[in-house]
Image 1 (tube, helix red, strand yellow):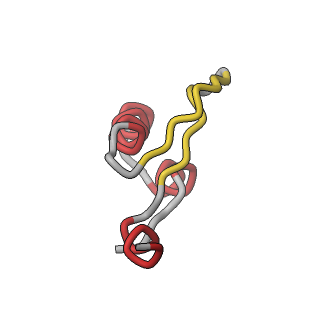
Image 2 (cartoon, rainbow, N blue to C red; image 1 turned 60 degrees about the vertical axis):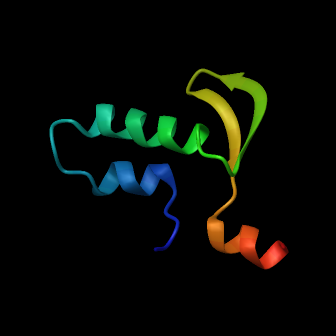
Length: 60
């Protein structure tokens, strides 16, 4: 599974729930075990670094 930026997923979503779907996806990524939360907030939300599983395995 390839990692796609949230903006790309939002643009690809043609449903009427694209805003709520984007919020759910962002929440899932910020709550993942491999996520580093910066504590810096913007008008769009908190900045975070999501480390894909493949990258985590390679670094180990």
